[in-house]
Length: 413
Image (tube, rainbow, N blue to C red; front, side):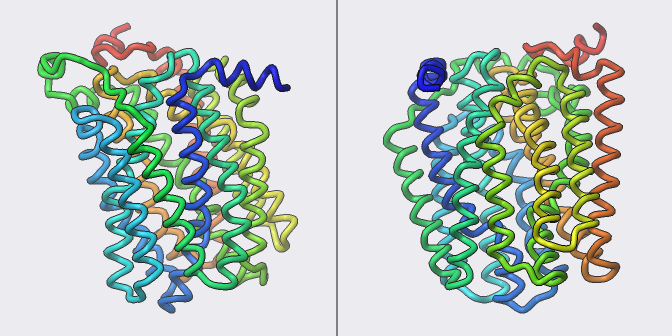
């Protein structure tokens, strides 16, 4: 075991491990509060779940715009600049959420989060692609997911008990951890932006984004991923409210369920990725989507803590399968001088799903029936399974070359 750990450490550069440590600290701090934001906003402001959904939709809507902005920033000015901006924003937002108490103030803070938060993610994902060779990227992203989920395993378990005492403690701790990661990034992380002649972008018909929007393989992948993210979403936002209001399961119970989710990723993600990286991307995504839909079906049938835990375990199996594959695919198909833009466009996929999902699921919960949330998630998961499966049969994504050239040339092949 020790020799295996030493071998893994030696495979990746020192800066990767600095980012690795920062990811752990940041995910621990962030997960003290974000899993409980739905309950916090609902109780603090005494508003219906649909309004909470609109607040999250504000963040996602602003994020749709900012993804397109931060991609070029990352490509032109560097990865580190974006990472610092995102971390500084997180500190400000956490302090504001702790101290302010009006709906208008929260709307502004959540919008600010949506505007700047993507910068850190796009920057760090692009930096990892810069640092790691293509044949090791799947493992690198899997390691990042493992350590982030170790933080998530710790954060909700602690955050649930902190929230039961005082949400101020949770937000203060989250702001402190974000500050630590900010300092690590400023003083220990070096810039990795590749030196690529600016003339290359000018040679692409339609410019950089014109190139991306002619990359039909990539766009098809993004479209199917929207369905997958929407199927996954209610487990993170609706489930704690559904468990508490429908079955009397408190925040601490949801925190423990999230801890199991995170521990499964920590224990099994790297091993699962070593298996799945040998198969075409679309079939891996289809398998992950199937388990996501199956988890939603299990949640619809659950009425106690242990059944909800079982539903989360099923969902997590799917997550282990599809999550590292998605970002590895994006890093693989993007030209080296457009990694930020490709990461940004793929981030819009999450923005669309997190923008539409909270409103749609909130409306179903408030006006139709709480259980209908899981019926929709099941349908989306199965639709996504079919979509990725069809793309795999067509060979559209699994045949995509590892070095992106002209999308039209790829299609001609």
